[in-house]
Amino acid sequence: MNISQIKSYSFWVGFRNVCLVKVETDEGLYGWGEAGLSGREQAVMGAVAHFEQFLKGQDPLDINSLWQQMYRGAYFEGGRVLAAAIAAIDIALHDIKGKALNVPVYQLLGGKQRSRIPLFATSTVAYDEGFVEDVLRLKDEGWSVIRATTGEHGHPDRHTVFDPRTSIAKGAHWLTRAREALGSATVLGVDYHHRLNVAETAAFCARMPAGTLDFLEEPIRDESPAAYHNLRQMTDIPFAIGEEFTSKWDFAPYVNSALTNFGRVDICNAGGFTEALKIAAQCETAYIDMMPHNPLSPLCTAASIHYCAAISNLAWLELAPYDGDLSDYDRYFINRPEVVDNHFSIPDAPGLGIDVNEDALQGKTFKYWEPPRLVKPDNSYTNW
Image (tube, rainbow, N blue to C red):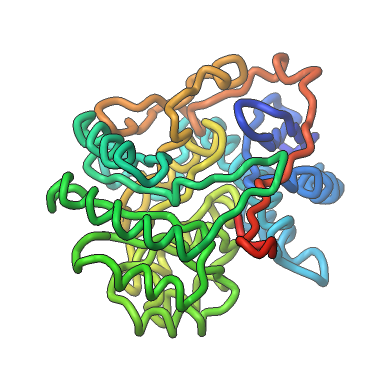
């Protein structure tokens, strides 16, 4: 059996483009994968086209060898674009191999270590009384792990003012109120989407009573481990870091120096199953549990479920979309994962257990999209 063709599709569905990759073989078996570099899908599709040139004719079951060829096949290895393209192809190859051996993907990874996948839910409500009501609603629905956002998400069609100091004052107040309302048993965290600097993050943490937050996700950008080291000295709130990392080398300084407490790996950006498993093992050596990033389509969710089933060090998987509306996906995805009792079950079907209605993709168009542009009160550009 050999790889005969690799196709990529990027199209608008719901509130974003998705970037799907299909690997076909000369024996009729095929696999699907997804790349997660949101907003730069065209670049990923170009990388996939490059990879197809030397992957065609090779055995799709030699996944580790093909991964190394894709990663090492250019002098300038790595980077977010190539890692996302590799991830999509790697996931599709695992889908093929599972189908060829008539086993679910998690069996290729050593078998499942749990009977179901625990999840966390996200509240995107702005910081006011409505935020407290929303987290209580999630608790009443049975969610034991709840993540907040900044509540300020901007607009893609115009600049939006984001004042970090105003945000941390409001956030600290309302998160404290939320903790009081939820009680101590519910896990409560917040994703600051790297919108703060070190001093702002330290001030934010200092404004809340001890025990208010169980994790603080991505408060600052991740390019500088030294900056996170300085921040680590200023607060004892656990950090959840890693959704922007694309390799075990990216994770290494954060794991080796105990700078993160939860590994926010994204299987569709961090090299697929092949690399994400190594990252989980790396984190396991430092007693760090994985908290996978899962903001994409149901195909990303399906791959994440198999990954979460197979690793020993799992905290929770992210549940997306945050509004719970999956109706736009029904036309394109077959046997998409469904939440039951606030968990995902683990499928027994061969491969990933999900398929794509390729006919429905015909005529679907790509939509150029940029994240919302946030500016500070002085109109200087800041992180979304």
